[in-house]
Amino acid sequence: MDLLFSLDPQRIRTVSGSAEGRVLMTCQRCLEPVEVVVEAGFNLAVAPSEEVAKTLPRHYDPLIVEDEDVELWSVVEEELILNLPVVPYHDDCSIQTSFGEIAPEDEKSKKPNPFSVLAKLKADADKS
Image (cartoon, rainbow, N blue to C red; front, top):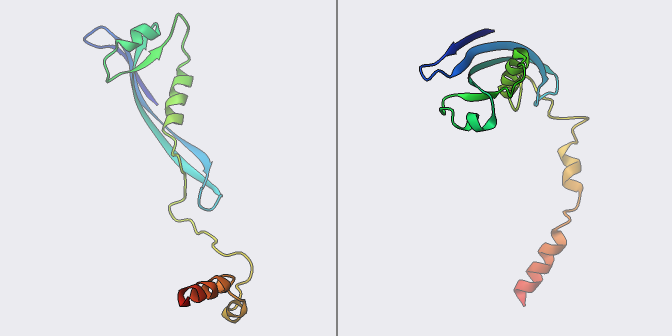
């Protein structure tokens, strides 16, 4: 984690930096744990209120303090959470696509088609 505290040319207090971490999430393909590398870069401007935050240049994300002490760990944690993947998955996971025994093709062809009655009714309607 790297943090840089500074004043920009407009005398706005800023916090910029980057953070990296590894978390275990559930793979959405195989439902097994997958380790995900999370990286976040941020460029924050310190604002004492919502009104001041609205006037900040667009290239800054506001960090509203409102006469409170700010825990930097929670700010960095929020930035990392915002950069988590929506759908985590293994790059090379194998997915089980069948469960149980496969039915032979002969048994499938012996079952009557439930729509055959409709096909017969349509054929009769076309004749008349």
